[in-house]
Length: 215
Length: 184
Ligand SMILES: [Zn+2]
Ligand SMILES: [Zn+2]
Image (cartoon, rainbow over all chains, first blue to last red):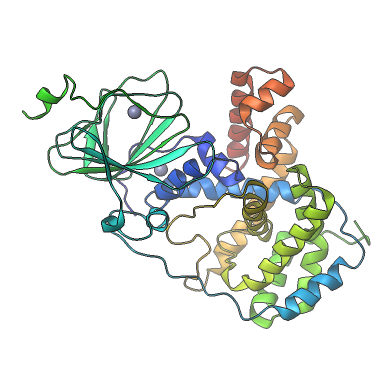
């Protein structure tokens, strides 16, 4: 497990993941981060334990005969289900590989301008998950945040006005944050980005940031 | 809830679980069912399922417990916690029709035979956590419960209770701090 992660996911999201109340895209972000981060994984285990303690408290009586019904059902149950083998990929943690349906080569990228590509992942509901591919030294096209945005680095690294982020690090941004993430020059940067309001790429026309990037 | 019986401790649930895992013991299953099925049903009803759906779902959860007993690891979770995670996943399936992405290296994956002492320590911790939750001030405890039961966001709770969002968040934070402190 990497000890090199400096930017984690907030407690409210970790608790929401444990409670099972997050939009699917945010659950995907948490699952992907937990795949790389022991610290947050331990926190989620603790939140699961809170759920266990709460469920212990009181119940609602089952109907007559429910136990016989259950015993009949397990009678029919076959051998223990094997755990399905998950795809392995050096860049994509298993939950992301599940959504992509393979490794990095299976990602269907679409250009969003200035060399940056994205692939929207199929999640339901109120939030969107996308993979972003930012060529080394390039910048994410100028975009506004309509809500909360979490960005986790999967390959390479990026920096913005707030900090530097490497593999496993998660940046949390919201309406109040204006930033220009720029991929480090060493390697192309691949990120998972999750938003609960549409990302607004302002323009596909190269903007004034580009000239500064090729130094 | 049915016949009066002394409440077994977390260690007893583990012993029953291991009898299911190792011997496919139906009596052990029945004992776990009597205790946990009503609790799972209650949990699902608090999450918005009607009684019939919650009952059906509790049946599913307990069947899953039987089918996946080989994945239970007492050094990683109490039986109650394990059942909670199964019930939660079932609820996401059923009430929200969402997928539930799980991290790599499934937390409950089969591993080297779990350490007996770790398992014991974990069961003791889970009992302390229960006591600590019970000892929380009512207002804090209620917010924690709602965060787990409901499909309601903090802002929905805010709208409903008239409490400012900041108050709700800080109460939850306070409650979690108290729990952490109690677990030291
Ligand atoms: Zn983390
Ligand atoms: Zn952003």
